Structure formats: structure tokens, C-alpha cells
Length: 243
Image 1 (cartoon, helix red, strand yellow):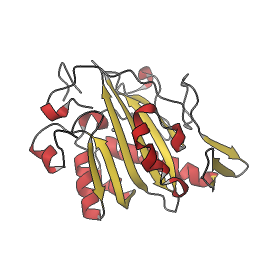
Image 2: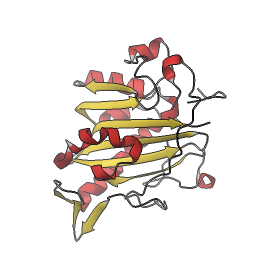
Image 3: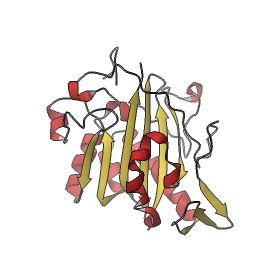
Image 4: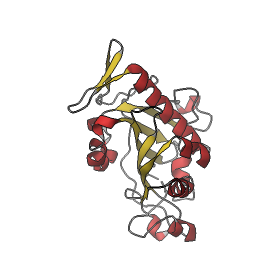
């Protein structure tokens, strides 16, 4: 839904129209991604030493560099599958039980079937889906891919980098994706900090910041299990739109 007032994003969807008050602009924070060139203050990243990688916050444990590399690669694959609206590929790399929270859908019967309510199906809040079975996961993912402003903002991935300059992007979408510690969450994702922190010792955390250079800026945090094979266990989305 991209009209003169368009809106992980649409509008004050509860009313079916796009927001009229633009949110503040967001600049992708620095992450552990190899293509990051942000001038923003550094957020806590993964600090490597020898053949081990240790998260730089209290209460975390040492994990091998191979584990962190695998977790980041999985995050890129997850976003690429979402960009393609490929539910089967998304489900293949996700854990059950799990949670998907913060996405926003165009108002209507399909949104209601996905769990949208007037008080949640709005930018900055979003729909929450708790999944406990593979069937529930597939249903929730079928709803997630219907979020056009989230799906439409994901940069086209080439390997493990996203374009930082829209002149380098095939579709104008740019962004950053990297591993962080919970304390490194961008401000729009801070409301999810308690939930991510509770997962601390058993998960890596990936943060994505994406913009379509047409008013949409989305932040997404993924919790990725440290066991092998890694799986995405939680997805938290914050969507923003400015005219």
C-alpha cells in the first residue's frame, strides 16, 4: 500500500490509512556486518580473540567464531527468504516454539485472520504471533509475508552484505545486518530488550536496519539459537514511515 500517505510499515493500520505524522528519521547503527560504514556511535558488537568469539556484555558465554559466522549467515538467508515471500524457506530455518512480533498488515479480513486488532495493527506496535507447532509457524509466516512495507524494504542480498548506498542497490533498498548484544539494540527495538535479554546465554542476536529510500525505515531483531543447526527462535519488528 503505497499511496500519497503510505505507511519489521504501513499506517495507522487500525484505521486503514497511512500515518500523517512522520516518525523521526533513523540511521542504521553500526553492527558486525562487514559492509557497515555508519557514522553512528558504535553499538556493542562481537569481540573476537583467537578462535573464539565472546559477546561483550555480562552474562554471556564464549562461542566459537564459526558459530557466530553461521548465525549471521542464517540471518542473511532468513531475510532473503522473507524478501522473496518464501514461507517454506523461512519455516525451514525457524525454531518451534517461537515468536514473531511487531509486523503490520493492511486492514481487512485477512489481517483479522492473522490476529490483527485495531489497537495492535498499527505502526510501532504490531501483531504478535506465538507459535508452538509447525502448523502455527506456517500460518504465522503466511501472515508475515503479507506485510508489504517490511517485505518491500529488505535489500537484495549478495552473499553476506547489503548495499549501503542506493546507487549500489537494484531496488533502492539499503541497510545493515550484523550480530549484536542485547544492549546494542537500536532505540526503536528497545521495548523488546527484556525478551531478548532473557534468551541471553542460548542465543545470538542479529539486528537489521533497512530503508527503501521512500519513507520506510524498519528495524528487526532476530534471536538465533546457538545449537547446531542454528534456528531463528524469535523475530521482533519495529516499522517506521515518514512522508
